[in-house]
Amino acid sequence: MRVTGLETTIVNVPFDKPLKTAIHHIEGVGCALLTVRTDEGVSGEAYAFTMNGARIKVIEAMIRELEPMIVGRDPHDTEAIWQSIWDSYNFLGHKGISIIALSTVDTALWDIVGKAAGKPLHKLWGAARDSIPTYASGGQWLSYSIDELQEEAAGFVAEGHRALKIRIGKPAVAEDAERVAAVRQAVGPEIGLMVDANQGMTPKHAIKLARELEALDLIWFEEPTPCWDFKGHAEVRSATEIPIASGETEYTRYGMQQMIETGACDILMPDLQRIGGYTEFKRAAQLAASVDMPVTTHIFTEHSLCIAGHAPNCTWLEHMPWFQPLFNEEITVEDGMVALPDRPGVGFTFNADAVARFRVS
Image 1 (cartoon, one colour):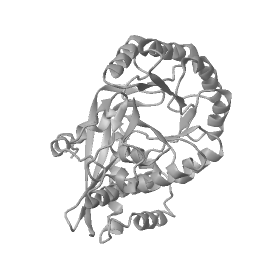
Image 2 (cartoon, rainbow, N blue to C red):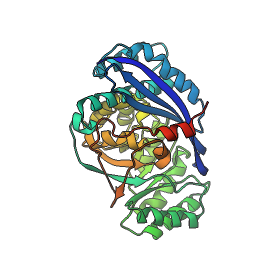
Image 3 (tube, rainbow, N blue to C red):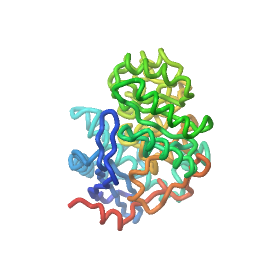
Image 4 (cartoon, rainbow, N blue to C red):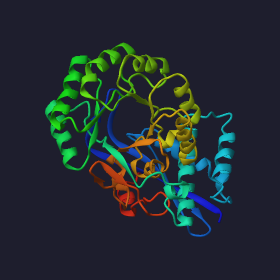
C-alpha cells in the first residue's frame, strides 16, 4: 500500500450564538479537512481547526506542503514518516502551525492503518477499556447568566452527563464563586464539576478563587494562568487542594515533559492537533504514566476517543459538540460514559452533505 496524494477542504461551522471565555469570543470554528488517498482505495481522514477560522488557510497550506513527504510511502510507516517530517522542521521550529500540520497528517495516516487492518485504533494499539467517562464541555460559558447556567447544567444531567465544566474569569472572585456554587446547587453533590479559567488569571487571583471553591468538591481547576506561565501554574497548584489541569496549549512530549518537571499541573491535557497526532499523543500519555500522572483529552471528541480507549491513565473524554455536524456517526452519552466504537480506524467519517454545506470557497 502506498500513499498517492492528499486532498484538503476548508469549512466553517457557525454557532447558534457567540460564546465567551475569559480570553475568547467565538462565533464558530473553521476547519481544514484532510483526506489522504492510497493506491488500494483505503483513505484516511483528519482535520485541524481554529476559532472563528482565523488563519485556517495558513494551516491548510502547511498541510499541503507535507504532501511530497508522504506520497509514495507506506502509510503503515507512521513512526518513520513522523520522524522525517519532524526532522524537516529543524529550521521552521517544533511548535505552532508546523506541528498542527504534522498532527493532522499523522492522524489521517493512522486512520488508514486501522481501516486496512479492519480494527478500531484502540484495539490495534491495545485497548485499555470499552468505555470512558465524559464531561459536558459545550456550555457553561462566561457570558451566561446564573439562571442560564443552572438551566443548562440541569439539561446536561438530563442528557446523561454525570460531569460538566464551567467557564470562570469574572473580574471579581465573589462573582465566579457565586456562579460555580449556583451550578453545584442546581445539579447536586453527585455530579462532577470542573472549572476552566482559560488562562485568564494571575496566580494571586487564581489562588484566592481556588480557596473559595474548595468546598464545592471540584474535579479540577483548568489553566489558571497563561499557558506559558509554568511557575504561576505551580504556585496555584501548591496553594490549593483542587487538582490543576493544563497542557492543551503545549506542543509535543517535550512540552508535556516541561510541565511535569516544573510541577505545573496534576493532570495533563494534550490537544490532538498540538501534541503531534496519535504517534506523539501515545508517547505523551506514556510519559505521564511513568510518573503516575493522569491525562485527559482536549476537544477533538470524535478523534480523541480512540486514544482515550488505549491509554490506561486517561481518565476523562472532553465532550465538545462543535464538530458533530461534520460526521456521519454520532457519540452517545449514557450514564456519564461513552462507549468506544467498534468501527475500523478512527471510527468517524466526514459527512459529504455537511462538508458541502459548510464549505468555504
